[in-house]
Length: 309
Image 1 (cartoon, rainbow, N blue to C red):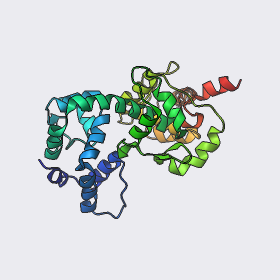
Image 2 (image 1 turned 135 degrees about the vertical axis):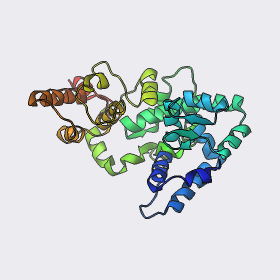
Image 3 (image 1 turned 90 degrees about the horizontal axis):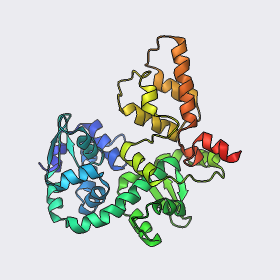
Image 4 (image 1 turned 120 degrees about the vertical axis):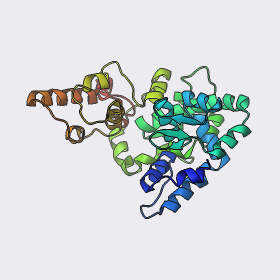
């Protein structure tokens, strides 16, 4: 089915979600036709399609290039989610499919050459994903240092710069050549506050394992705290496994006011006793001390305290 026809089944809110996944901006007064045209204009550009395909996680990438085009949600939830988030698959709550145009694009690609380039681009993307979340604003040299953690993939200074500019729009970061800086655009309203709190703290340089774990899972199991295992006994918010990702990202990107975040997460949770509530809050505060976050340039609050002492 053509992409235009698939999108006719989407309501306004679903179109907005797809645009958000793509990293494209829209106005609240845009019509459904406006929103559909933005998606079509971006995704029916062959170069944009290739940019997204190059950073699609391994599991979904292999499924797509093997020739599968329609997927049922009850058979492969992981694939369903990744195709929706990376905007290569569209559908309803039961299935997701590749548009006819995407299948045509796949037939045009020499995957032997494409896969060689993709290995480097995927690693760069994983590093940028970590840096965007845990630094917010960072020097190009810091990204280069992260990338060189992987000794199996060699990227020159020039190639890193070129490949960075070839990342899909959804990365939502901008490179300022004159200052040699990269800024996460989703933090644009908070940059001054972030820089103030970061001060002159050093940048935490993650291991290859950490970078890939965050890229694949959306959170990091550090040695101090396993988020989900410690919190599932308290949570009753209907989020299921997604809780650990949402929770982690909240603590990683904004936990200056723990009471406020605590209220946000637990406003709908029923605690049997005040003791249980206080126990949960205490654990939550402990977790905040051991979660990497943007205000500490990737370090945990506990690590920063140890460094300064």
